[in-house]
Amino acid sequence: MNTFDENNFKHGARDLPEHYSLPESPQHAEIAGAMLPAVWVEKNPTTGFQTYPKRNQDEASDCVEYSLAKALGVDFLNLLGVYRELSPHSIYPLVVEPGGGSNSLTAANMVVQLGMTLEDLFESDGLTEAQAESLSGYYPDAKQIAMLYRPPNIVQCATDFETIASILQSYQQQGKRKVVMVTIYGTNNGTWLSTMPTPPVAPQVLWQHRISVTDFGLINGQKVLSFDNSWGTSVQQNGISYPIGNNGQQFLTKAYEPFMYGGIYTLDPSNITSLTPAMPKPKYTFTVMFGVGTSGPDVLALQQCLQSLGMFPVNSVVKPTGYFGGISKESVEMFQAAFGIPVTGKVDTQTILELNKIFA
Image (tube, rainbow, N blue to C red):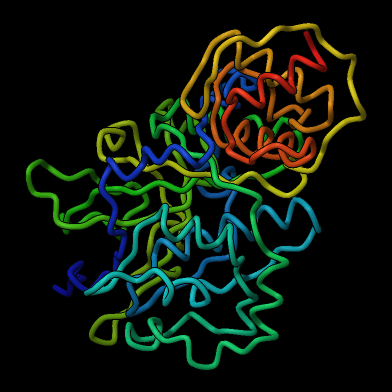
């Protein structure tokens, strides 16, 4: 009997859970107030869940970059109406760690800075690890194109099923699509070609892998997250083709929830720039300094004051929540630059004085 050897799979995520606490990146807490609890409905496992064209990282360990390419492709599908195949290869050599693989936040921050070029301009699929780690042939014009495909920022989120589902639902309610990227623990337990892989049995955690969660729903009454893997639609071994899930689409059940971490999603271009005209000016007196990680009425008032100046987003995804994260930091920096005071990203003494001139 022929069986597939899962040791041939390439994974490549080099994350640790504590990496997901960097204060400079927006936190989901900053925008969660705009989201409603997810409504779970029964869906057809073959045709009922959102999925996208499948990619294959082949011999390379760049699953992190493949998940980012999927997320950005979906963002620009929302914006342009066309799905772009973007190049994981254009980021992986810049962030690869010794022995292969990369950290998800490091790669995501690199994409925010440099963007990701089109796959046709710098091919990724079918590369060996050595080829994937090389920037040879990444020409200046392709790098310029990459700057067109940049997310304004990344948002860190929890990886419980309800949080991920509420994020996806909030975009679906606007007629948009979204991808939430997570890292999973896995073992070579013989189920990773199946439609519903089985979680590892601790302590036999052998690998970490980055996946793209694209939808949520019920299958026979059971909550699942649908994800597009980066191993293509099938895999070859010893001349035999083994299908992967439903043409590369697979599902995680709630049993997998303890083995997921490091949630990230992008703020797509339409969100960060969709500022409304100036709103009525609120009245508030600021008395204490604060910055990233702070929450409470001072932060809520700050966000509302900056909204009235057109310096904090006003849309159905980003709303004032009273939590000071990366979005608030960027808004404060915009305010400081506009009023000619040192750009610190914090509500410091000079910023308080300037705010109180306007709003006290």
